[in-house]
Image (cartoon, rainbow, N blue to C red):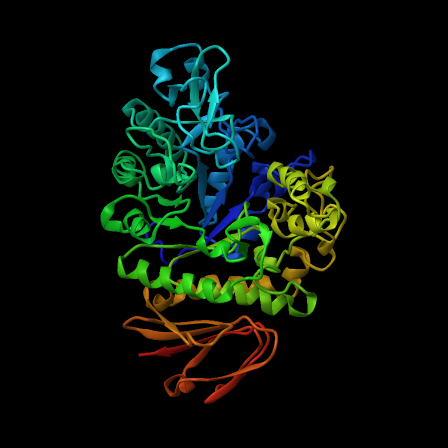
Amino acid sequence: MGNIADKTIYQIYLRSFYDSNGDGVGDLPGITAKLDYLENLGVDLIWINPFYPSPQNDNGYDISDYTGVDPRFGTMEDFDTLVREAKKRSIGVMIDLVLNHTSTEHEWFQKALQGHPKYRDFYYFKKGKGGLPPTNWASKFGGSAWEKLTSSDDFYMHLFDVTQADLNWSNPEVREALYRVVDFWTQKGVEGLRLDVLNLISKPDKLEDDFIGDGRRFYTDGPHIHEYLKELHAKTFGKKDLITVGEMSSTSIANSIRYSNPAEKELSMVFHFHHLKVDYKNGEKWQLDQVRFAELKELFHTWQVDMASGNGWDALFWNNHDQPRALGRFTSDKPEFHYQAATLLAATIHLMRGTPYIYMGEEIGMINPRFKDIQSYSDIETINHYQLLQEEGLSEQETMEVIQARSRDNSRIPMQWENDAKAGFTTGTPLYPVSDSVSWINVQDALREPDSIFYFYKKLIELRKTHSVIQFGNYTPYLVDEERIISYLRENEEATLLAIHYYGEMPHEIPLPEAFLHGEILLSNVKRNQLAKRITLQPYETLAILLPK
């Protein structure tokens, strides 16, 4: 795929994108049917959430067969057709692989349970301590990270769901088996890999209790992580020039630089999530707080400056399948601000240094549905917290307010193609309910309206391809003392770009540097057509000024 700096990647949550056969679940032929739409938008790759055979205890991230297609999403022939048709439109396919753990229904784990010594060593089986787990580590999904076998005193490790058993990467046979999986898909013409919870694969050589935390400090960015990634790169995708992104849980800038600096030969780029926790109260996802805007700004500036100084590379995003929609979270989602707020969010990250990701529906300004009752939600984490929050003393109304803001189902509802009861997503009964907002937010209307959010995204994608300063320019924070503004200068030998993104709802006056008064307005979401020494920013205004050298 060559240069990553000019690319934009589009994420598809498969079961909610487009249903081709009327069973209410999105599928692979559904993506193929919408490739012309994605070509029109201008994206370079589509990242598809897992479609492999799976018991679906964790939305397909519990894989029972790495080299198959779950029948609910189609067939291997459908996948081959998708890759072929996407290529015709210069779109690459990025698949989502989980190399940290398998489903307990995977053949390897089943053989391990039968006592097969080779496969026993594929996982972490340990004797308990007097009936207690081998260590006191906590699972990310709650409870112990160890599950006891019914047939013996042995426990197996699961950092996630009890049906997701962690693989033992210190065993070379495990690594070789996983490299064969990667090779299988690259031979099918896959051009990108998104690697789930990748920085958790290296566990310490000695497993011990954590007396100051939940165990994560022992395995996050673990002791052998960089050597494993170098080997993975050398033996698989490094030979094919694939685009790779690692999802890095609770990682550091120093490690992220190593993961993504091309000289290290590990990955193309990294996902990190610090900026999506600035409205968590006391670091708790299920406690609402105002967005701490100064913290958000500081995180963006720090990561941008430090990653550039170490030649690392960022994946830039606001939204994904695990997050509520950014629109309505970091800005208002009221109809009167809809266009400005959506385009402001887009420009903020698309003009930064890194590779931007668009999550399906973001390009038309989809918002959180705010369903009124718990029956409309299906995410297991949400349903658990519906009980927990009330046990902690919240009323049902307060609990629903938290769920409306935080549930992962916010981003998993059907893609809004048309203004009808089923959002043009299916002819059957949709897996998730359709949002009322479909009446005023849908693809059909967006394509008809020349000034829609869709065409603003299309322009951002084109600008990245056209201007090397957006791709490679260095990054200098600007207007740092302005409370509600994220602003920065991008600069290279060809041009300087000044980007100003205003997160306020009242008009606000700022000075413009003299030099930029003669620049070109590259981008404006309020139809600004002239510059002055002082300008009054409109609510949620975004402005980019280009000064060629």
